[in-house]
Amino acid sequence: MDQVKIGKFIADCRKKENLTQMQLAEKLNITDRAVSKWERGKAMPDSSLMLDLCDVLKITVNDLLSGEKINMENTNQKNEQLLLDLAKEVEQKNKIIWTAMWAIMTVSIIGLLGGCAIAAFLIPEGIWQIVAVIAIVIVFLIPCFYALKLEVSVGAYKCKKCGQEIVPTYTEALMAMHRGTTRYLKCPHCGKRTWCKKVLKSNKKGSSD
Image (tube, rainbow, N blue to C red):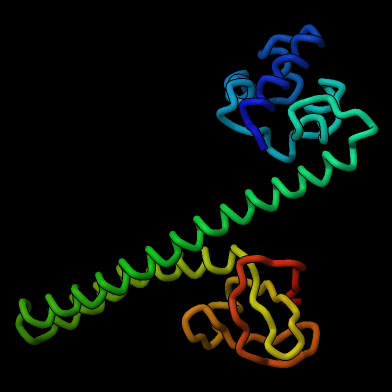
């Protein structure tokens, strides 16, 4: 989606309705600064505001996301393009999150090993060395828990038995045995526990219920 184009479209529609940025903001219970960011292409309206925004501007959600008025003749084509654009954006965001997850894990593991080595060689044996090692482990494990949260938030885990894509809760993923990003999960579709491989491109949403 072209945020700059959408922003200009919002501004044009607002002006057609004879509304100032402040007046539009008041109707949506937000600040005029938020409206200004939309119109400058610096941000997109939250999904929770889109229906109300479209109602005020007398446009459809398709019009808003396209950044132009859509004729009935090319509605299907525009819908398909919007879905493709949204899919690409989700895929790109997933890749960014995935890269961040691996970066956090790598830095945390290196820091953990380095910290333990320093504690082992520089701190005399005794209670303080044990305390230092425990503190280092705690400090460097915290980012690992956050990295797992990032891992769970993108894509899904594919059941080896039936191919169903599973989206577990954070707790389920945390408690499951794992080899890298492959986790031993119970599939809600076939009921079997298998080593489920992480896939970023999710075609259907699984359930862990």
